[in-house]
Length: 289
Image (cartoon, rainbow, N blue to C red):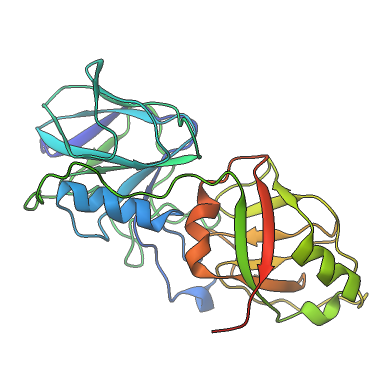
């Protein structure tokens, strides 16, 4: 077996392989998937000299521990967390040399929810429909990591110039999501639309890679009927029968029958990936651009 590989010593609560996802297959019922915090994943790759679309590991809350079979350069971005090599603290948000057989331990997030671990050469699992991403809804791609998993690595590229500080966005204390109303905002009362765009919500603990669920005021319907299933896009804000919005993230279903009151601007979705349960959320209506 090649020495260009990583052994998973501690998989953590939920660690998956992610890249830029597999857009363009919604007509087949295949979600986009991909890293929820795409800028953080791209930064991690840049720090170790990988192309921006190379596959990385996305951890959830409590990190993971990895043992490379050969010397690698690694970088951890996204949610700030302690990083250690064989028990020795090393830099977060910077390229770090990890000797063959050493233990790279990515600790629990100090703020935010998801950290990204890039390794020189990228995770080289077999792609499915052009992507190496794990899709929790459809089951495509590699399964979530378990202890003992061996991950093949690609050939390393040229390491970029070393940086003193890597720019990154802090996890949100309050999540402000700019939305374009529609296409089914007419299915809700005027009072519901005012509630949606003026009242505060909080991120519910049932949130996951499929959707960010909300706790807060319910939205009253003006139309009591049901829609036939129609297409759903990344960032769609669907309102199920309990009246509380759900913001669809990367592993969202491609169709659905509950009305979509609005769609979140793509630039705001990376912050949504780092919103822990209980984070205050406000929806801000903006004009289509």
